[in-house]
Image (cartoon, rainbow, N blue to C red):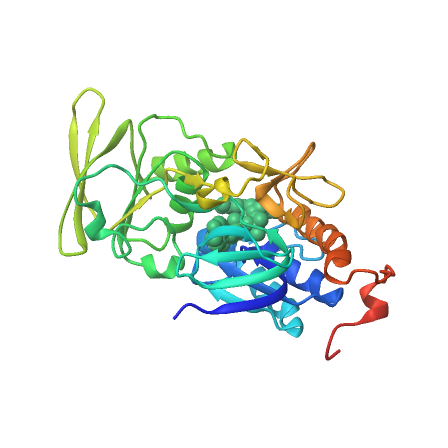
Length: 338
Ligand SMILES: Cc1cc2nc3c(=O)[nH]c(=O)nc-3n(C[C@H](O)[C@H](O)[C@H](O)COP(=O)(O)OP(=O)(O)OC[C@H]3O[C@@H](n4cnc5c(N)ncnc54)[C@H](O)[C@@H]3O)c2cc1C
């Protein structure tokens, strides 16, 4: 049964920036509901690189992406946000009282006085190689994200792609996988030069195999378990690589999805905002994090955090009209339960 909810601010996207927006809204006494299409919080950090260390979060010289998300969720918790996970937002329509109604694919609605769109790159998904029958193996022996490196211990792994993800994972798996084979259609890799060099050194030492210049041509296996990956070179040479797992790393398909139809000013698949407030062209709708753009925008988590603070301050008069907002430090105010 679809449910109807009411809140002060609806936040679309539970990535790092959406989570921090819960905290910033909470500090200004604004209740939040957070909606995400994924069935877990954390956005790209949780879905794409949970075990990778991040080095540019202020105050943390090094923190794994999954741990950052745990900390952000913990920081948001005192403000008791309501999470609606596994729910794609399809529509954003005006509510009768001047606010907005967020409508999910399942028909749930969240009516809010203001909306923060923190939807990252939109509905993101991997670019899938066009191989016959690949769907049967996906999620079991064809993986687009590695959630736990340990799960690949002792396996024969084919990695396809020539960018940072392909090279990083080849380096990370070289000493725990039974075999790592890297398939790329060019001899040169587009990864960070020092990592590309390390890859080549491991290949020279015989620790892993570079299968270049080849591209994926087919899969063999039964049920959901892969047995071999077939590859072909441009001049028609063929090879059969016996493998337990294929990791295709051909980048992310970025698709704004339903957001493109909400009447927001877009610039190359991003939402244009006023950098002072993160307001969009539509009153009451704000955008922050990777999806928001303005002159000089840096697509970094730390920029998104600052945008969350600015949006929350700009939304305060909408939620608490007529109330004077005194700027206060968190050290003065504290948080609930502190
Ligand atoms: C491999 C890799 C390494 C990175 N390393 C760093 C780094 O070292 N430092 C750094 O600062 N940044 C790094 N980044 C970038 C960083 O992850 C992003 O800047 C950050 O995730 C943006 O956060 P966000 O909350 O704006 O969006 P996202 O993390 O993309 O989260 C957006 C969420 O919105 C949801 N969503 C989208 N559309 C809808 C919809 N219609 N309905 C419901 N939900 C929706 C998505 O499911 C997603 O969960 C890296 C990224 C990658 C891929």
